[in-house]
Image (cartoon, rainbow, N blue to C red; front, side, top):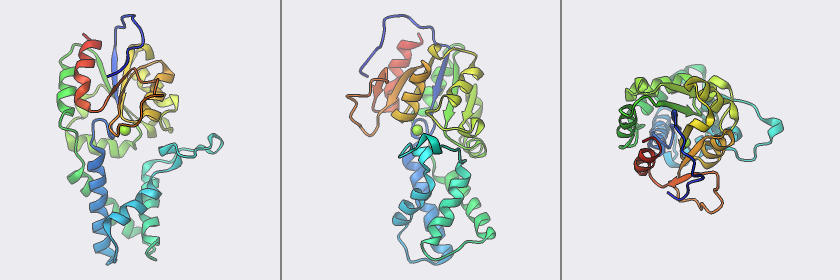
Length: 254
Ligand SMILES: [Mg+2]
């Protein structure tokens, strides 16, 4: 924790969480991808290392709009993750001179969900934090996530957490990714509050913190990779681990 912006007392009405890398362990998502590559290697009888294949797969998966790398605002367009995922599946196989059929893609989709169901995990602290907030009066608890609607629904059902949130806002719903204002505004509309009455918690400085602060939200950045934070002035609080947000929230919403 490093910084409090002002001395005024704000009555917060909503707390929003990013999902991937904030409540859900991003490393576990990588483990799912690694197992997917093992399944692909077995099905297509490839002589390849799953680790190398994951790197190739991810290079197709993460579009410029998703990663914010080299994005030219003139060329911005929205691509749902399922399309990027299909492109990644085809792309990685093309590198081994295989051109998958529609049937192969159906197989891949089933295998994709199977591996994500088995390997993707929440952080150990996630349930405790949400339950703590749930017990804290009437504050709105929402999700703001760069995710497709159907995958979000699937994953939240697997974890049994859907009912724990008052609102879930996805990039697919508004057809734009963070830090674009649309997704934040939609979430605020659902919560029925002003940006200044809300807190956003996320692990991406560029997406969650810049995006939230541009709207006027209070921001808590989970800087897990210990990125240099000297010029990260848009974060009101900086922590390195999800569990460190307990005392901050306790203070902000008491
Ligand atoms: Mg994230």
